[in-house]
Length: 292
Length: 238
Ligand SMILES: Nc1ncnc2c1ncn2[C@@H]1O[C@H](COP(=O)(O)OP(=O)(O)O)[C@@H](O)[C@H]1O
Ligand SMILES: [Mg+2]
Image 1 (cartoon, rainbow over the protein chains, first blue to last red):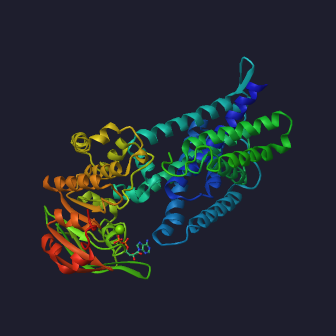
Image 2 (image 1 turned 120 degrees about the vertical axis):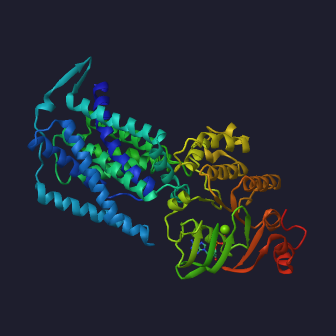
Image 3 (image 1 turned 45 degrees about the vertical axis):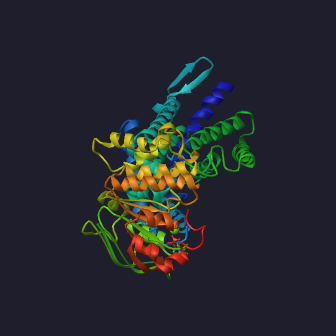
């Protein structure tokens, strides 16, 4: 029972981590909360779903397609809704409002294009199961775990070691310094928004698979959880977002498993509040200094 | 090498610099001195593209650079060590230096790491340490080393001696002189006027956004007005 729930919790949590990473990256370079991230995630889920349903591609190709579509959407948002605001001296709330506008637009668009009802992935995938000692794990869970942890691992490595990854960290730490060192920060911001949105798109497909439901409103609830994890992990800390997501997922699953399923979100968010009482800066947040 | 004429920069409705002219000849050290709030930092930030001036010309190596993005100006060979140093606190000393060489693709980057480490041995000892854990003086060395990694033709330094102990200040001024002797032109902003005039060839005095005096550094140092305002009393300078 315990191990089974732990696997379920890790699976759910890893998707939260992936979504929270999107918030974290954008928070890092732009210092804003991207309120449209949940909707970009939702569009990614629909793109993946339609690729599988109508073009009959396999699930990995669908994820790549979702990633690309979401990344493009992120780029559009940066160009049309965020960059014009940076050129002017506007209130720091302006880009936040702007992303809320994008989120409303995307949700309405999805309602019009895809309809309000929940749609499911073709079922073959969900039925394959493996027994590993006391644990039963579905193929879908293996895919989710593999893709999420794989992407997180690659992202970490890429940020730590590559030239562009370091430029993202520099921009996140201090955009003025990044400019002074010769980094084209507009390009880095563009890239980061694309990357964050792309990860969101993949997460959309994974979550759509795991609940076997894709619907226009899925962005809102997932967005709130991603936000909670962003704060839990320490506003802009990559490690914090990864671990925070896993903690939230595990907490939710255990709440359901031990009989309090209607309190699932209440328990999970209550726990976050408790952690923030003890560590107001979040799990890995620092009061100053580096982010990543 | 750098010719500034009629440069004006505002913050909203406040005009912080009002039509200043400065010439920095190749190979020289030029000091820009002035009290707090005179507009020195505003001038430096305008030169490297962090602030957008309203009027004037900035000619660098014969090319007009006013309005260019900062990364393009770095690419042309001008680097600023900013006031307060702006060390990347969450990145290691080595990564800080690497980022200094961000635009470089030539094979001599490795050699330049060695040069920086030779100039500042403490940085080599601390190279895996996070930038934020260094002392003020070490951070200033790192900031200078990092700027040198870009191999600038013109190095701008904004109050490099600020907040440092007298012994460290002397070190920093020695380093600035060495860098200049190795061929880098320098524009130095300082409140430590005595030292700044000692190592400079030319000096400009900025007061509330205007150049009120300029000339050879030793002549500026003898000017009664400068002596009274900036060099007066035994405690001024170090
Ligand atoms: N970000 C800013 N917004 C508004 N006014 C500023 C800003 N930065 C500097 N100033 C003003 O511009 C003037 C020049 O400042 P600064 O260039 O920092 O002077 P210095 O470096 O010589 O001490 C000062 O009056 C200062 O108050
Ligand atoms: Mg200043």
